[in-house]
Image (cartoon, rainbow, N blue to C red):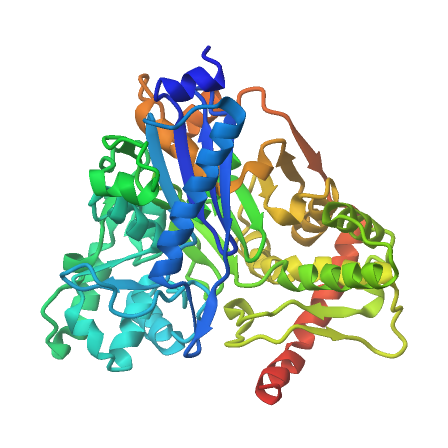
Length: 531
């Protein structure tokens, strides 16, 4: 076994980069898939002309700055430069809309997953395909732009996701991993390609518009985990590493979405396994062993990175309002001359929440910074709702905020478990909600009425997940399936901690959810009255 420094010097390290909603993260791993260095770049989306976006300049600067941060970490730890790598993987927040013209210029600002302006398009396409088409999927954005008569549509030469865009800039290849591709337009698990019937139906739908392209002309090529997806070009190397040390020729794996990397990082690509990612947004991914009986508006059917069908419940909101409340309490501490670090504050508040009433004492929290399609909201307004007779304590307030962070996720998963009788052998949690040991797990276990595991590696996140997919592309001489490779090469002997649902917590969360659902009209009124 090489040590980390020798691995990097020999060009055997693997790089994964994920562009998340609030942070771009790079993870460098050794031959045993252990993280040996990392880089970060914090960023925020912008609301421009009523739509959530990141500018191309912010995307490319963030990518370069994140890699620069990784370089600095490598130099600080090992006193060397990164000159070559075994492989690279790019991941990003899924779906959205990035259309480009023939010269490679973007035709409108990147429209992220967070936008909910595509309701008319999603509804019509869902009916046409007899398949749930979510608001955030690329095909919804494309058809909405057509319905809105946006002039740029006729000039589209290439349509991709954020991960696909970065991969294209670094390799010149217009490809996409099947997991991310399944959120552009549905894919066929049998062919591992876009669903031909739906592609044809869409082309027929828009034929009267007379556009100079058909859908397949502008979509990325679909690849599955393990396939090589191009190499780092000279221009790509200079874009990624402004210092000029990184050499071209590095092999890339197919670019993936953050859902696929979450499944990979939690060893949840096998049928009847699942994972929950809980951070700025939240989503659950349950790998199905049978088809659902019918389409559901709140359940998306996507795929694992190797093409198996997955039931996804995606929620636009998770911890943003919870974080805002923690910020208020930190401000209070500063006013009182008793500031503390954030990790300590989160830990104290989260653990104190567990001493509150199982039903939050009647308190209701709505964490809707943005719209939430699962409960039919095009916009959101964070709110705390309570009766004068409710038990308004710090513990109940924090517990209500924790419950709110996964309440909508519970509403979607109740359909899978209660109506469809989907069976799951293991659910693994990862993301910021689980950083304080035991608390987020206990809350999610109560919400889903299912044991929840958190691995020691859960904090590594999606950047590590895409690094694993990059390693799988170049280090699988036995030709193992992705699930087998993860079990044998990465997670064999891995330690984790499982928490079973507590009966009182489950009953309390059910009571909270009933109130939460019943008072959605209050939230609707707030979006209409608070402009």
